[in-house]
Amino acid sequence: MSFDKLLDWSQSEFSHLPWRVQRTLYRTLVSEIMLQQTTVSTVLNHFERFLKEFPTLKSIAKATEEEMLIAWKGLGYYRRAKNLKKIAEYLTAHFDGEIPLDYEVLVSIPGIGPYTASALIGIGANKKALAVDANLERVIARLYGFKEAKGPKLQQKIQMQFQEGMIFKGVRDYRGLNEALMDLGRTNCQARRASCELCFLRKNCQAFSEKKVLSYPVEAGEKKVSQEHELDLLRLVIKKKNQILAYQKSEGQWLSGQYEIPTFIVKTSDNKLKQYPKIDFDTSELHKVKTSITKYKITNFILEMSLTEFKKLSFPYSFEWINLDDKANLSTASMKVLAKIKNRDQE
Ligand code: SF4
Image (cartoon, rainbow, N blue to C red; front, side, top):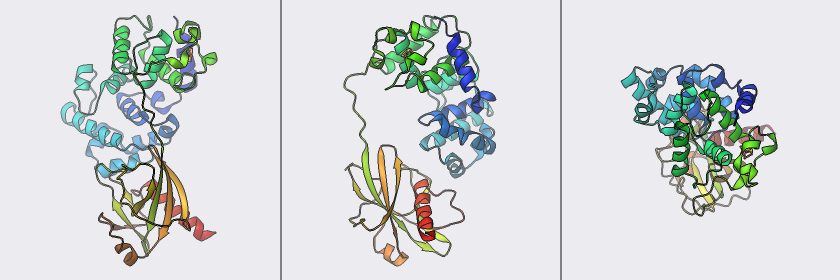
């Protein structure tokens, strides 16, 4: 099977991505961590700005966690920012801020797992390694008709066959191969939609020849469908001159490290949710703004009140005044609420 056309397609369509234009191990590490659970277009908006602020692993190691979280804003899943900081601190302390290229050494570093280690070797250094995430797992299972259930067993089989040269025979451009398979998984070979007519591999694709593309990779047992939840929040706006009352989210809470305006849960279809205290409140007359986080579709109802009124609500977290000119660390949802009030006042 030839992969030349696939690699040429990937090169001509996606070589402009900033982490591909100027390739270093550090830029590969940052891009791979940013791209986990985040779309290419979102990462594009933040990648160069982040690199400008943190040009080296040592600069990340030196920064405070708060500085990192501010720079990460807009990318979501803040745990990844903390993880990147942990990796940077370790590599600065033990490898003088350099990234080693030995797989076993890499996976022994706190925060680096098999995927990131393989991405650094295969993509960053163009050496023999396949960075198998859910995307590559799907594309390869379809291409070669692997019937193992999705998960560790299938991934082990892929890695073993790749290392032994049984799949992707003759390909020496390991970086190009990894990137092309990622591009294919993101575009034509998606989990619920495959555009095989646009794919250069269809003549040799096992799933395509069986006309069972969407049946691969095989699900392990009954898959739990992740359920979306509706969530109504009451967002309180308490102002004093040019300041707003906010509280800092602690470890284990959504957006930990960031500041949010005081918030209560009014209603949710997820009874287990404990991110905010609950309140019984009639929101029918309030202005609202929509946001979302993970599986929650959120309606934020906005209520302005005085500090005296607020104190009667026994909000369980300690709060402080934040200068409105310095909103850098205020959560996106809080900013949207403030923007809504501003627009309303200007109407
Ligand atoms: S032919 Fe279809 S199923 Fe096979 S790799 Fe291409 S897009 Fe995926």
